[in-house]
Length: 191
Image (cartoon, rainbow, N blue to C red; front, side, top):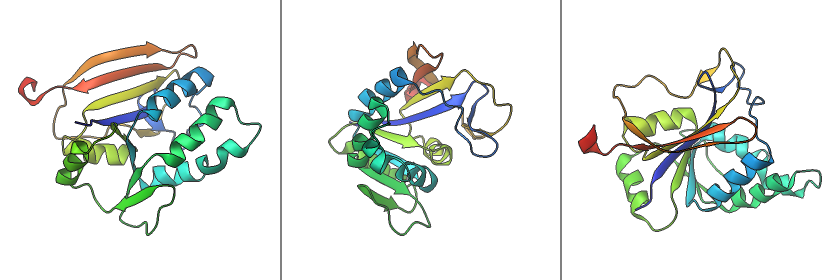
């Protein structure tokens, strides 16, 4: 069965965006980008909100056409273009780049996606992640902690009614100081 993974970059103080939605503080170098390419290449699809999809669609479809683009970034462009995507949006009428639109997170539909063959599915976007967490749909958390304190911004994890017990499965420190923490959701019997 496929898993649902949450993968996000955060500052050390827990923000995924600065106060003006900026993400220019992400410290993505060649090593980290190659790691992401290798991991994402194995996935079965992206599950994103409208804002995340539009952010990605504004840049990645043609990024590999720029000869000045670093090789690892050029490698990612076709990975992103070809990967199936489900965009959760109540307002979007059309989504390009191998994307379909879902109006809301329906737990039964997500569980049916997990039953389909293929690689794991990754959730992107804090609001969508909160909705998936509310329905207990996230099997694994991959958090990339960047060595920066923003002081304020949008926190990755919103208030929730339930505690989620997690088990550390892996950690990795990259040369630029970013630390990847991979946690598995504890089985229901352990909660």
